Length: 316
Image (cartoon, rainbow, N blue to C red; front, side, top):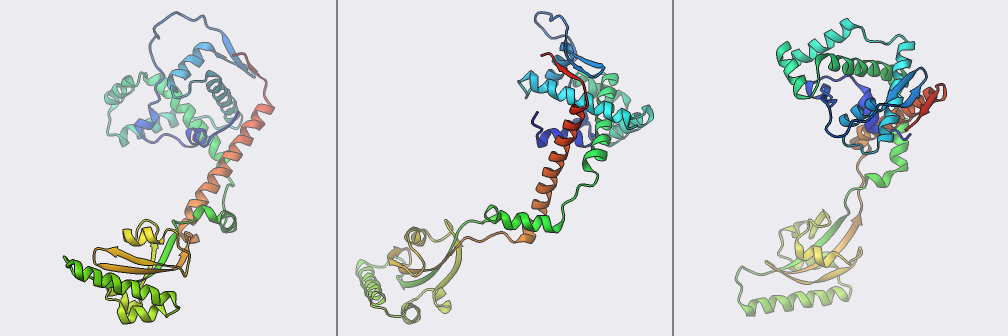
């Protein structure tokens, strides 16, 4: 059976809030024809009946395949038996103390707690059975799955280096800009004069004149002090006219004149790069992913070892 990360999380920790602890079991008889009970699985000296499976199915409506639900029930039987063999059973006192802590965290007295359980279709006794199992499974998980698991700096760094493309950021372009400025509401004659000037500058660039010198001598943009350098910009974040013109350009190529709100532009793409998130920024994310993967692999192997040593009959 494939074990998912979500299954691990289900059994990994004791439930610490009322909402997490109230697992509906669908109390009350279901409408429809009565199904004669039968054994659907044998796990060592224990059985799982069809009615057990139906109750579990009502608790997990998101799973439509009863075979998967049954496999999960078999795994729980095996794990609970392992916990018993290893002296991990939860005592009545420990269970009562844990429930009292939940009530305290949720500011509930016994009556309010019983009412909350009833809304979930649970009696206190049913809840104690459910919660005892959760606590026991948590102990088992901590001892046999979590113990000894770690991810060191070397593993994190190696994963980062092997999968560097996964940490790529959106592509960025660096553009140099020459602006032949136009005042707001410029008359047609002035617009035409500016266009001709920009076209003449573009022709000089085509003959090999130095672009930076032309910017210093002719550009009226505030970026002229930086020789027209706009710095790096993410694709899609530049001025629309520049963004559109730069789409097909490679470093060193020009576009223009481009009509814009404040004049005519000539641009040169200086550099295109795909930056990568720094290691320190994604280190914790990688560590968690690697730890979760180790935990899942360990849990899968643990279940397989329990199954290999057990007598299991699936009769569904």
